[in-house]
Image (cartoon, rainbow, N blue to C red; front, side, top):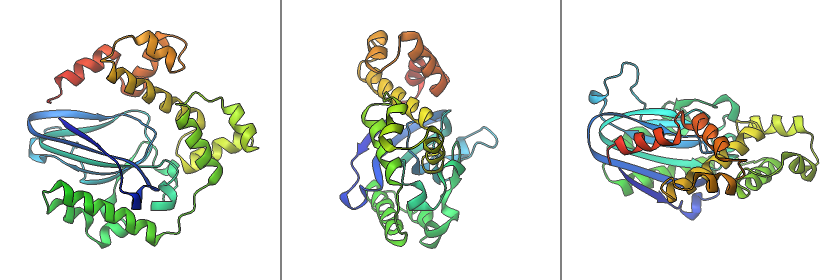
Length: 263
């Protein structure tokens, strides 16, 4: 599996945090690609061979808007695979696309049927070209047009809180955050659910786990105890419990699944 992490062009960087491209041209059997919670909603173009996906009811839409998720989203793939994911800043979902974030939590909706994407036939344009650069230009243009069409209004306190939680990799005390923002615990929770789609506690836990997961991937899953402590977990067992919650696998099972997925 070829993986590319791309920096969004400046014209859409206020709306898109990162772009990830996954490509595999040699998938001869069906496999499941788990999309693990990372704290970001996404606009995703996903292309696979539907004729080789044997599981009934597991066919995927080509252009999907994913909200926040806790459990992994299971993308059934086979044949040629292309996934282009534009991860939005978590506080941009409502301003950019008009959806209250909590409406999409745990869901993926067919974006090709709504609003601007339908007007410009975005899905058809993406399907009618095989060039990655052309597809990226189409996706960039779509986000740019969304920003021009909509009056972008973000909730400043929640934007600040989200960035601070990210910066501290989920380990900031929420009580300190409430005091800094001069808001109650209930108000912070309500606004997070509206604009982010998760409670601040769950969002913090996802940020914390992803920081640990990235470090484990860099370390080839060595020194679990050290990684746990560096990322605010009390011990290795607490990290393993978080691992099972967000991936449904133990670390050893996760490694085995990753090894079995065609490279």
